[in-house]
Length: 311
Image 1 (cartoon, helix red, strand yellow):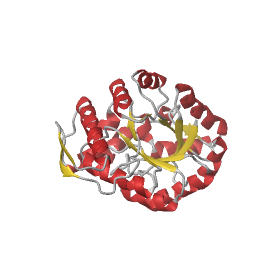
Image 2 (tube, rainbow, N blue to C red):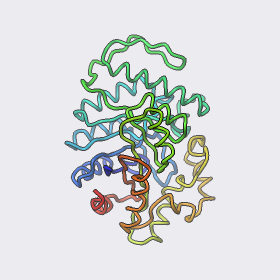
Image 3 (tube, rainbow, N blue to C red):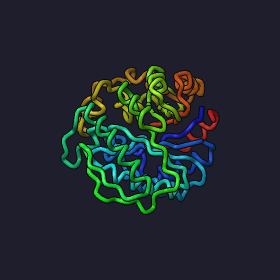
Image 4 (tube, rainbow, N blue to C red):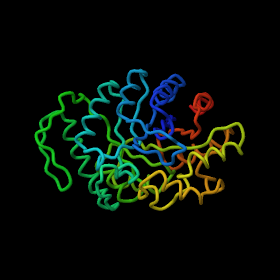
């Protein structure tokens, strides 16, 4: 299984994201995944630069590491034709090292232009159509598309790459896994769900399966728990909260109910290599081919050095 590094746009300013991508490449990581938000989950995280600008800078700062979005929502805040334009440019700048991760998004990011936040089934329908739009435009010809959700009129990407970036479809439920199998070049999930991996493959899905191991890297478990509670309480918010709440202050209100012990099993606490390895192995047993390591702490230099042992 290939080990990658997670670039959390909600937790790091743009220059730090670029520098950490360079450090990850120097350390020998195989890939980096970068989140795409306009808001952080909670104010303690404190960031959310424009992902496409950061990707351009990473392309200049690195030479061989692969990078993918985890994930871009091509539904509401950004039209799929514009996502196709951005993805084409990213693939060209990175000389074929880019892949486009897509998903159905969160209200936290998608409400900002005043659009209605659709139900989950409608968002999945929109994603299905959006992937068709993106693939058509990446072909490099003039395209006109008139679907149920999107319209494109005589658009052409003049810098469409010779090899289009793979499209990795995020899936945390059955219908999304089937869509990933039908329309994606791989899939992605942040939990080691072997049943979804099996469903994806049974539906004909092929290609890489990306996951994420998150933790708070610190010199003691007590310190790590405090960091996790402050900077990643959203990990313990189950159900539809992560997709339905609209503002960081809404997540902070729910976070008042989150205890450190609620994060147990969801994040790795501290600097014990055995605990990090145990969580990595969960994803490998579930059938994942790639996993990115995510430290929710502010400083990343020591974590990247620590994580080299898992490569």
